[in-house]
Image 1: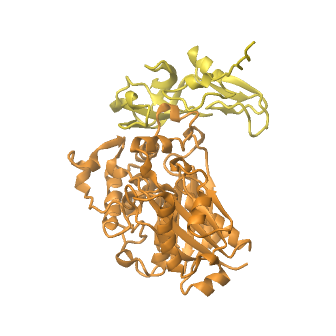
Image 2 (image 1 turned 180 degrees about the vertical axis):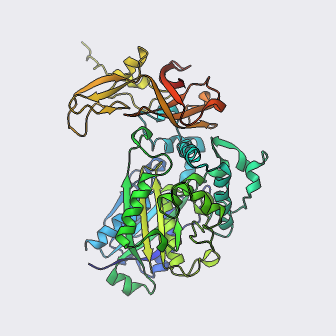
Image 3 (image 1 turned 60 degrees about the vertical axis):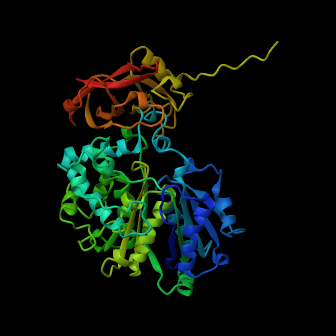
Length: 388
Length: 145
């Protein structure tokens, strides 16, 4: 069997309050990916539509979106794994192509979060945790990640200031990413300034500045067989490795609280499939829904030993010119996190990096890139490795 | 004669500030809470202890469970104090969610409101006790051992 490549990537701008419906939102990412691939809609053999359904008023959005994008009568279906939905979509598209069932598959991620209030949104995201045994205590995503942050600090001496450094890095690149929802600068001093919103408490030890923003957005990744990829694209980017894992939804069923087992396991699978080690990664996109999530990703992906993630950010090693650039597009922290669209946006960034088309965010001549995309509080983990 | 309405056993709706589940095969958990006991289950076939309690054992593929009480101290794995709450929980703010490790199992819950935050340390020993919430609902909270 041949390789599987990415021939087109696109995303909408990530914004607050998208002035349109979900089908119109999905069109934006789709249009960019189709123009990028230079193909027509009849070249697509199937579509995988990815989002988290609790935000959607539309029941079964796949059919509605496929019709609007002109992807009927080809098969289409809906896929959900919370915030990692579109990375799981990539995994599914890979297997559809690798099996020979289809030649070209579009992975379309979208989320219009702004139709409900932030408190409602927290409650719904909180229900991505265990609704029978944990949600009745009043849980929400920042508080779960805060528990990981607390455990990481207790075990390794990581500090809230280390986490603030991650946000400062994200804002450095968010400012130059025209697709990002948060484009203002963030300084280290803001975290100790009671007048700054960044320093406001959310769930100790996490503060406002440690949390990503909700946003509306869409993304699209077009995957093709080796033969079709070579025919359609001058610069296909190949999928070298894929990993995926799950764990107990209830924290009571877990063993590790200083990292995410799903990221570690998915990373090991992806490295093994690609035949590489963490040292071979030239540029990475990691799921920084909270600053602590990026810190744990450094360690779970093997960029740093457990407990040594803080040294990477203190030494600016994850900046664009560092030894392992991470989230040089602003990450979820600055770009925004429209759940179902997030993984596709991360993949887009890595594909553009590998093609040398990332503009001001371009890392010097990367050959291999990695995407780490997490669903829920480390409930689902996907790691995908790409190469030129 | 009118149709007799079937009685629904929805005791589980009494668990927590807001319960999102009303019917479960472990509804007796709530009866134990009313008696002041926090209970898990133990598989009679393999002896595995489950907290939160389960009605079924995925290893043995059986449903032969005993109730076992959560007693004594556990070690605090981590905690977080919330300054914002999901819809329906605002009146409880601020509150701390936390996880205790009992060795064979772990218990997720809240730390009692009367434990000052500065006295809470990862690794400290805490006990689990039933708590009645201001709205009459039941949960359990952790106290300093």
